[in-house]
Image 1: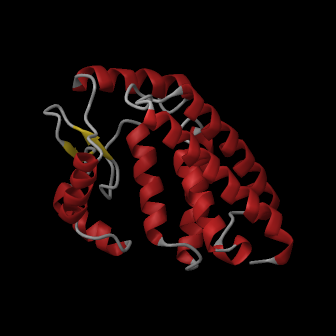
Image 2: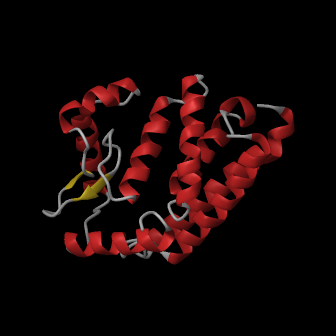
Length: 201
């Protein structure tokens, strides 16, 4: 880690810990079952703004710049910045360049790419984003090329999709995660929210 970035690294770690602490608190009261909780959205927006400032100051916080834990925290903060489409979209080419320079994992770019697709309500490439389908079964969000998805996943260091499907379903079963509304209602709510924050027109 670069010595003059120690304070930035500590702040990144603190930001993601606050995020997870709030998620845990809301989860205990089952407050996360009814969509995107306003308190969670607020902390994600706040962290996103602070991440923007950090990127402006030092560029993307890589392991070399801020250490492994803080670099991972920055990536998580970016993934959680779903109310800030511009931050995720503008970070994609930045992360692609860093992956080409072997400064970050290609899988991190793949997840961000798919996440943008998911919130733009269009098919994803790598199958990293999941949702409950119209039958209430947890599956990858729509795929742009189902036949070749494992080829794309292998190129960025991700395991075969079936392995991830099984793992995600086991996690959902363990945590008793289930859809609380019909599929059509959830898609409509997503569409309205995506329009409100600027993912779609």
